[in-house]
Image (cartoon, rainbow, N blue to C red; front, top):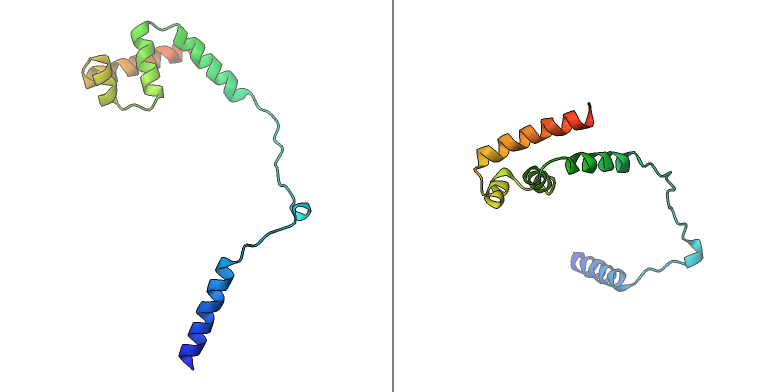
Length: 103
């Protein structure tokens, strides 16, 4: 008796799994959330890139590698400097950017 019930359950499960459920296109409600455009982040990025333009070429390269989420070991290998020097330069660049952005 147990075996018959188990086989019946497995058979129903397999049939249900093969069947494709469909819905009428008219019955589907699209839930698109309308959001107002907020350009504050875009403005902040423009300010950051304008501040980066004021840096020299080596500092720009360090900043862009840092923004690409490279770790200091990869940055130091790419730039040909030591890892400690990359960290020190990056901290100095960060303070320089802070003074440029907040005079």
